Image (cartoon, rainbow, N blue to C red; front, side, top):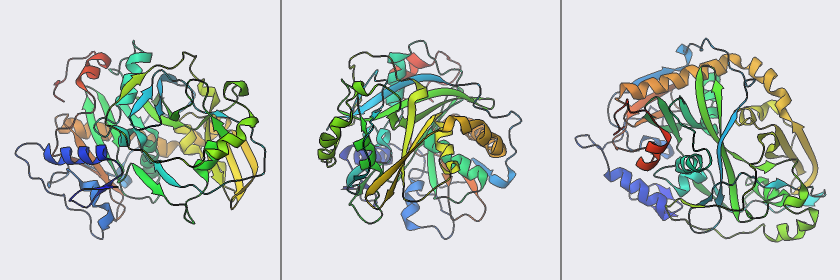
Length: 426
């Protein structure tokens, strides 16, 4: 772990260097001070105030005052694949473009005994590997795979994880404090996920779980992508009146031919690979093109979970709904012994779920529109949205940032937006 003089720790030199660049690259004429947190704040949450002006908020979104959007929210209109890419394992930050495939689900015989998860794992692989431009892999993949696609008509670019946090906010559910970086390119609001640590170390403790080892044992990447670390894709779909591009990670491809990635005979070799060494990565985003193949159909996308006790499908539905992920695979276990698999086509539950949560979904659309408006009120310049758990009333506050941070390298901005109506410095 790398430490900064401010007390924050980073799992790679690249992430530490970006943090220090942000501290030095503040807007001239502004005071580099921490904005005052709410009373009863936790010292561990001071990171959410990095690079926030010590001033009044530009905009406040009080959950109790949010009026739901008038337009219904439905998944019935479908989705469009914008791009996909695979992060590679190894020291350098390289992606496979076009990748098109998640790891393929394997029919592994049960029961099986697994060791607990150990070593480092990514909380947000994109931010950890490219802290300056977390959406850069998506933009480069789009420019390569979908050359006619433009973001001019997209209202919001966001990660699935951020939508889930905002939905919990709208529903009034208790959650930890969170922060987003907000950017505006013409009409497109870009919401960057922020985490205290984009990578965490798991020591195999009592609460570390078995989820990552279960996923690694039961999936295998197809030929040409064997050294992949993860598969990410972005879908375009409507959230009410908002046109959104949503990025998320796909755990597995379910229903593809087992010959594409090896069958149960690969169980022994998979078990031998359950311990891997940790690596740091350079802050680069090189492109490599693997063997050409048709992109994985979204209809085969699967989310993998592990559970030691029964949970209702409703606990998983927000995640799979925002990712339009039709398959849910749950490994049921008692301690380290996995004894049962539950594979469910959760897409059949989408209509019922969105109907029962229509008010919160319409509130989410209204909150996204308010976040977009707040950045416009700051002249389109970089902002920070903060939610503090310790606040008596649930509220998201938007502040101007002290750093002149961009969301996208200039060369990609010119390729993916045609409009010239806004200030190009934004």
